[in-house]
Length: 245
Image 1 (cartoon, rainbow, N blue to C red):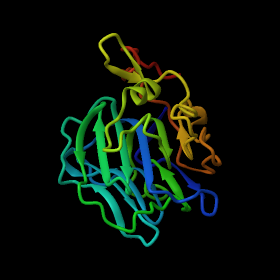
Image 2: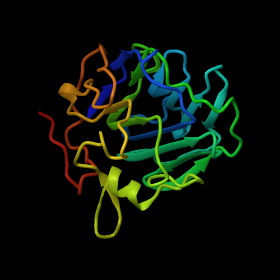
Image 3: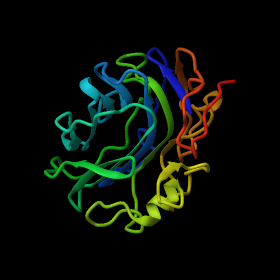
């Protein structure tokens, strides 16, 4: 869990030639934006912007993946406006170009979809210069907390149905659930949560947040200074309130 202050980021993760392109992607993370009305705050991206997860103006969450020819495969665009993106919010973005769905879930609830997938159906994961907290360096940097960012290149029907619905097994694997079924941050590693290791998984304390618990290397570049989450901010872990060291 790390706080990005608008000038800090993790970057330089080069996966070119190390991962296989597939027709699927699943991205899961918790975020707590400090100033969600600022334009173009990049939570995650690669330098060529084949992958984009960002907040735009007016609390708009924008998610996009592209194919190997740099054509859009799926986009949940600023046309879909997610209001009240304050406090900790859980996001699940799931795409299967072969089955023909791209959906985003906010706090475990279906929020929007791209019903007209384009591109050649092969999502480009084989990229260089992945970044968290900015587009590159401190460009279009994000201000706020980020926790448990995971990027999977495949998933099975045990976790996501053929029409893009998240299953009960998915929720039990990725979240802690209370007796009412409400979701909380999973107080355990997600490295094997979906039966296949993600290529990127950053879920550590801020002191080692750049360590990738996924199948690939750690983020080698830190721009600015790593910072702990803001003290006093409630985390979605059973109502626990964080106290900065």
